[in-house]
Structures are given as structure tokens and as C-alpha cells.
Length: 244
Image (cartoon, rainbow, N blue to C red; front, side):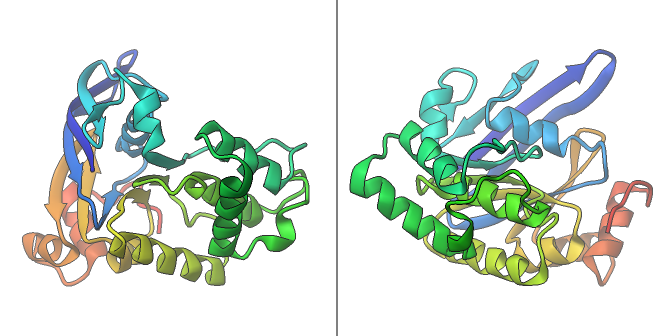
């Protein structure tokens, strides 16, 4: 389970997150939806320990991220807003490196790589260096890297950005399968159709706060609209900054 309690984060005079609380349950896909600058990425960065909150707490399976990032990371797979691949390493070397950081070795590591490569059909990329990969290929490697240790919790920042149609379908099927296995999945997106199709629960953010939450159907009812896109515009109170 992933949980944030009363999170605050400022950058100088800019308030990025303002008293935000949310909870993503096991066996569920939870979405963060909001315009640019709403605080989604700041929230996710705090959850995976890249930033420390000014106030509040972030928990992974009950472990306070600020107090014990090592234990929290053991149960967390992260796809960040910056892909961060090393050009001179092959895909296999990336997966080996991250697998070894999580204590995998020998046949256990080989099995984890085999399982992970099948998620996105990247066998032809395994022994190629990442320099020169297309954006979509980089995304597949980064997503595979996040899954190498079979984490209970997944945190994904716009995971479908740059993927082709077939890869998006593969990712959707994978996330649904992981959810059905009891995994906890939290992801941000600008794509309304993606959020509506995948999410069991949605938090809508604006100006660093949660302004609404619920299932896609509940949010539409709350806003008195038929589509999630129209409900989103109504609930945040403006149509500025929406990327579809």
C-alpha cells in the first residue's frame, strides 16, 4: 500500500504540494490526474525518496520513506519522469545492475530478466547498448527496470508517454494483470482515456491539493458530466494547462 499524509513541499516562494493526502490500495490501480504544475511529479518524487517533504509523511507498506528509504525501495518499483538510462550499458546490463541492487544473483537474476523481458517483448534489445534507442525503446527498458525485482508497489510517472499503440496495449494488460495479482499501482497521466480505462480510483489535483477523488463514474456524477474529460475541467475550475 502507498500512502501520503498531509504532504507539503515548497520551492522558494512556490508551493508545489499543499497539504496533500492520498492512499493507493493493494489490488488497485490509482491515478493522479491534474494540469501541468498541479504537483503530481513532486508528490511521486517524494514517495520514492528523491525529495524530502517540508511537512508530512510518505509511506510504502507502512515504511516511512524519509526514515528508511532502503526498506521502502525494496517493495517499490519506480518509473520516474526522467528515464535516466546509461548510454554505454546494454539493456541486459541495466536489468542486471538493478536486479543485483535488490539482492538477485545467479539463476534468480536470470529468471527475473527472462520474466521482465517478456513484459514488453524486448529480447532483441537485451544485448544492444542504449545509446541510439528510440524514445519508445528507452521507455520499455525503463519500465522493465522498474519491474525487475517483482515489487509489490509500482509508482509510474506518465508511463505511456512516447509508446506506440501496441506497447500501450501491452502495458495496459500488464498493469491489469499485476493489479489482479494484488499489486498496488499508482500512476500519473495527462491522458484522460488512459486514466478512465485503467484506474479503479482517481485523485484529481490542482495547485498542489486534491480537489476531488473517486472512481471515474463517481467523478462524472460529482461534476454532473458524462465524460471524465468534462468532469476534470469542471472539478479543477479551469481548462488551462490540460494536455490531451
